[in-house]
Length: 326
Ligand code: CP
Image 1 (cartoon, rainbow, N blue to C red):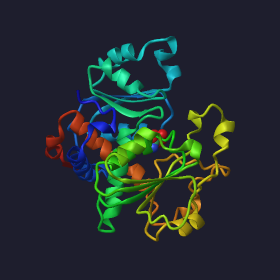
Image 2: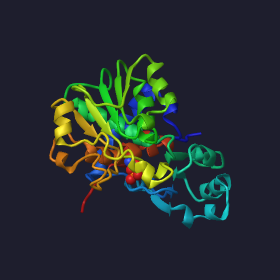
Image 3: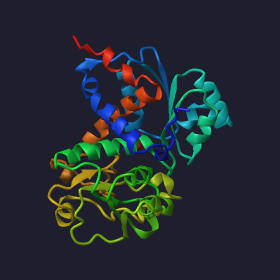
Image 4: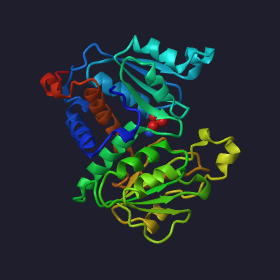
């Protein structure tokens, strides 16, 4: 069906189309034009784990296309807490919906859910496995940031840093990067939090240079430095997560020491702003190349494009343009 479950389902051509439609969504996202192509359609947003950006930008994207959004937030508010299966839940909710976006703490749970759904299902994050729509918005962000330096998605030097074991966004992003030419990826993390082998091999099997290190050294020569949060919710305890906090923090001093002048800083967010975490310091907030909030904003554009493509209305988007008159 038209599910979006993993980045593995995309190739360069399908991604180029998604990114192109995403760029065309900017006038709608900024409310300069309106679009009613999904007038009356219903999105069920099923979030069984906390979320700010993904949940709200899925909802906003759907609203901007003219649709309605139903929200389920937290396992405790759903009958999953009474032992109902994902399959049965999908059978029921898909009867109420035209499309479903779902986040769940278990790996592959969204795939399982999709087997019981009669409408398209979009993975908004399944445990430590994947976050495909985030990876697409990350790629869109890299493409738009690199345009300023006359670069595209080929020949890039990318540094991924932090909790690479549990960070599903970097798993999905690495797999997508493997589709481009001459990509070099440096993975900086504590040894215990290294990128899973299957993700590393998606890059190395495609002939890309992958450097795995637990030490920051020299100039990383990065086009992009992508920081991630210690995913405390995936550890056995807070104490265990605390063992890794404060490693590879990124602040202005570290940035100047290890990055190039124009290295673009990304982070899927949320960043952990507690002083002991300090993973991405607010002293970077005034840097032009801090792309984190542009990145979050791009989520609306990319999710609009994905809804249009998933529901097969991508060729009707422009005929619904209307000026905003208020
Ligand atoms: N980047 C991301 O997935 O953020 P949320 O957890 O707030 O949705």
